[in-house]
Image (tube, rainbow, N blue to C red):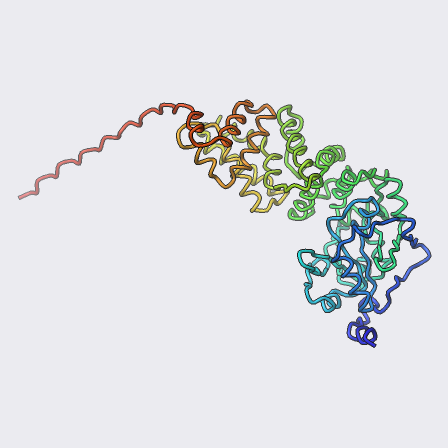
Length: 455
């Protein structure tokens, strides 16, 4: 009785995906893989993902954990995020879950909230080539908008890689595979669904995703998937800078940034993303500095330690700042004003291709701007620097500079010792103040005597 009532309340409109069935509509091409074969550990599932699929299924809809979460589960990794795909429309999902909200413009999604966990729910997507949907495509083939709903088969076809076109039903514990993704994962291959050239033109960011997932998951790119990437690298220029920044952030915070940077260069995708990064990596000191920074970031990510995007991008762009800083000084600017001019110049150039959020770029400039202050080890200046809110990040940055050979190790060790000692010992570590030339006092000019008034 309750089930029939829920189906009547959430019955879809004629233009929406058909609701009311739990078992996915499958064609002859789908492969249903039982738990005894795929051996997904149910303990790795999040409570929110299970509650979301259960809630939608009880309301009469199809619902599956989908995409990267299923891929990671098959690779015996604990997914960081869980996405759910369903034949319910966003409005229907929103009505099923009290704590949920509809988001997105290019394609509407629903965020379902369970405590601190957010589960992203998408409606099965249809082909953007249909005339009866809200879709828009650029002349280059890039998808600009695709609010198009479809069947589960359509949804699987729209996904990028075979490894991401997998659907897991927690109620039956079966995995539905439409494009041999399970076989590719077992073989260690990352393969594009459909014609790679067409799919990259639809969304050039897929090239970056291919590089990132290959490095992160240890999957080898299929030859047909890999071959077009260098030829289509310029397509990334048409992608909004904010999207590029988000994708690059995922790449550098994947825990496999070193492999990703090497792959970016190998496939010609680094040009225009981080300006002149290839030049920096070809300089002995610059390459060592960036390598140390990426290695440090990878280690922290793999150990589940917090990582600051501001710190990471500050390291990647530091040698750009150094070069511009020296040029301004060569042109007659004093060191500190020259540094600030260099920082603004590098950030302005960067903003043209990769829109680093202001909250990150502000911190980057603080880290850079504090570096000259570490060379001032007399008087009250070291004490003031220790109290600075960004001291720890700037200090870690200093240590990288010392370790790379840019500065003497003695400077980094001095600040380590200074921070770890008490007040009395600190005073003995201070260097004698250098005598600054006294400023000449300007003589005040005498006012000319007033002329006597004419009688």
